[in-house]
Length: 323
Image 1: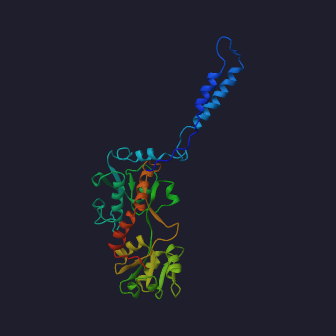
Image 2: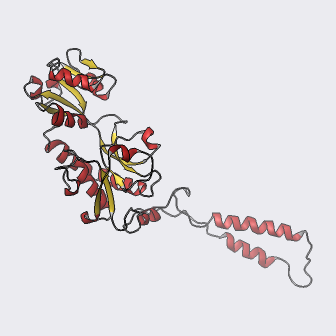
Image 3: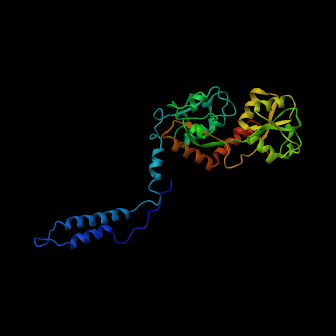
């Protein structure tokens, strides 16, 4: 990590001035030693010593911030306060659904969240064999109380309300919006947003999904608006709409477990500065939070998260990004 530059130092040091003052002070048997001289001399020494400390070499970074070197050392393998020494314990629910995991086996490294967990472990200095998986129900992961894991991945959206009970890492996934249509619908053949302009669309009221319909797709007829996604899903099955827009995680669940003759037509790029994000869950006040977040940030910065997302949440599940 970069080392902060040192501030420019004065050519003549305050300690030298202090020595000169002491050297020039009258001494010997004939030197006066009045009681009122001592407090004044003490005050002068205090001023000079304070100035000497203030002019000592310091980092440019604000002194209230932790220095880069101790932070790096604290995140090194062997120094992390993990649940088990030398191991990284990662939690998720069971069953572990695709495409976040594959074959209900988080330990195989397949699926988006499994791959992300092992990538974070690698950045923290842990080999794949050092990762231990723990089954943790979703509600237990986000509830207050001591955790049995170092961090948990289970499509948990970061929210201020949940932050009251747990810590979150930086976001590792920006939730996208997706279009679902019955496989027999004309909408199922769309490859661009323009290809959806002439079909009957539906979305839940007050959601980002409806915003995408109105601001990105901009259909030539009024979209159907529903109070719940369940109602939108029913309308899709009954042929009242040609396609519905939901967030991608919901789209995966609907097409795999609820409406199996439907397909994900495509997904949109994440937009907006306040996009919903999934974060790793940690114990409230965990000493690992900063280190895990730094690992996630580095994976985002070097493009690893984007590559894993493309592999597991686009190509592997046939959910292309609309152009």
